[in-house]
Image (tube, rainbow, N blue to C red; front, side, top):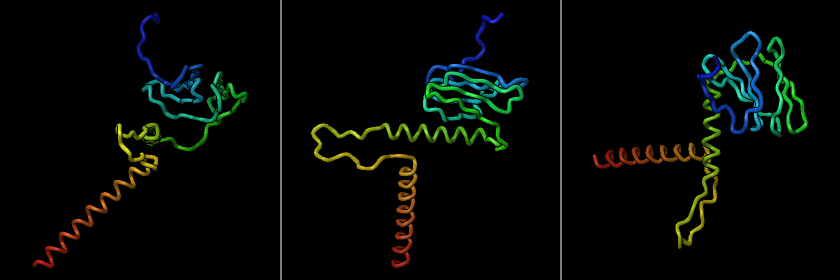
Length: 158
């Protein structure tokens, strides 16, 4: 009986076009209209890897019998062959990278707004992860400088 849905994933930012299991394993690939190929663990439902590359919606996917390569086709009129590499994948690093990209894109989408009637212009720089980290480093340096200044004042007064 296949009447009960046991798990539902939001796998892509747009429609999922195909799902294919790697033969003899619990791993599978998905492709979608968001131009992404995603590799999943079917036991834990964790995304292992995202592969960008196509310039248009991905419409088709084939997995080789031994799982050593996949073939995708896209609206951009290309057929791409993706081969398995010996490079190790660290899922936590992949997730961290995706979260950083999401954070940076959300910062870039924020538009500084001026209060009504204000005559000043908006900030000229773009906020991103690098500028935020640099700002935090400057704040730490200022705090350290203030601590050193206080120590110097205490030394002079002693």
